[in-house]
Image (tube, rainbow, N blue to C red; front, side, top):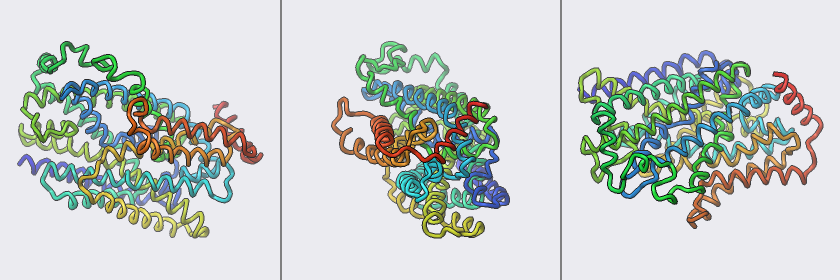
Length: 517
């Protein structure tokens, strides 16, 4: 009965996602509707879809898992790593909404840009489309594997929960995501992301309430923490600088905080800014997004702390224990109570599915738009009619999904390693370029190109050649790559011809409009 109710909850959830896709399909009258929802997103949908597509399964699996490891097997930095990562992401979220959202919304509407690659070309007057092509290739390089990691996560989740064969579960999950995204486009992805963010929030708080009760209350959680070998006080356990004064020092903190830099270059988040119906509604969206992100990450970290006591109480620390599955373990425990609890547990697990799907659909849409809009239409079939373009966009999405399924075929692939790497890739390749494009009038197309290429390449170089050296070189690749990209943009822009008057006039108009508002 327990398994039946969990499966029923998941089926209801997935069925509703497909229903929304069919419903939103009727609203797609043009490619602008398909890629940006006609720029009609409300503040709540904008805020919650942006953050749900950002957090992914990392919020419900990765972050609690890192916090739970604190104090285990000699690891005394799990809590510190989780906290500094959350702080970096919270700061990055707020600043991105504060300084980037308004300008990119205004700029993209003025230049009629519907994708990030087209925005770059329109901003710098790149009539040949070189920036469009390079930016589109960067999106393909980092987003297709990123989408594959989402498909893989679905397969692993279903396999571990129900014993369903990995490939079967992964393909079914991919089909559902593709169906509602192909049908409904950006509106479907954004609306389902709103629903998914609500489910994720409910899942977090239900898990906290049950976990506290099952672990015997706060006092018992405290006693279990103090029972860990080498932990003499709560202050020692919750020390965000590590327990030995050096284990989490300046460089690790800076490296971890650098996660926040990634926001400035995330196409699926920037597209939400471009799609809001009115820039005047951005302040409300910013407050909603910032509050949700901060509270959700704090709760996720607390679940990790609570998870240690829960795992101890239920004798879960075995050789096969996986800290990232702590919420799934708590959900399974909830399901043992009664039929209603089993249904509730199903929705908690659906929340994990939601976190995966909310990212995968946005990535799929961004990758397909880069191929169909920024490569095929720009360079191959320039006079493509609107209806043909819509169907071509859907066909491109199907092809990309098939490639992602192929890449996800290996069940041993690392989901979170791919996510971390792709986050760094976008943050370094696009982040500095977006900031300089919006705020520095002197930026040239050659400077932008240098920033995109150098940032993307440095992520690979640092990850595979420099970081393995260890010591002071053991920094998250996003930070050094972001710095190199910024330097390249400034240097190349200064030594190349200044932007044409047409380009600077548009920049000045946007600047005046932003100051006036």
